[in-house]
Length: 182
Image (cartoon, rainbow, N blue to C red; front, side, top):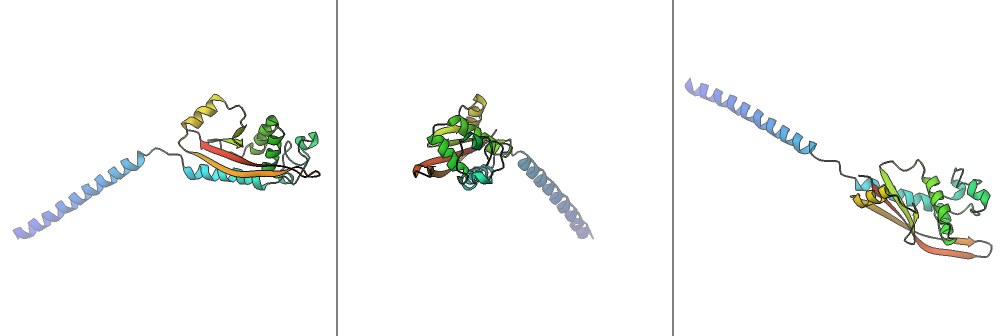
């Protein structure tokens, strides 16, 4: 009879001991997983950078519904855009060749307005020349310096400067750099 009581007591101690161990593991796991700080996700910035450069290189002027940069828009009426079959990237290359950085900057700003998530910033360069923003603000530069992840995406831009005469421009390297504000 005494042996039976000892075995029953051992069962209770084993049960209590296993419950305490399980509690320690659960609390430890909770503390470990709750202490991680949100780290910028590289994939999000990569996707955004690649999507931006692809959008600029694949979308034609006649496919943009924009009062400033689209077909029949302000730039079209001013004669600064003359070929509706140019892609947005080719049009930027044309502005670069014609040394019109103000129009190029405003063109990018109008095209990307309300399409970039607010937690991201970007720069646009053609042939290593900063096109957007032409004159970065101090906070822009500080956020770029503090960025943990800075993703570049590049394409080559070339095209006709004048289709009638066959004048060409390029090839130039177009680059978008995207980072998350920290």
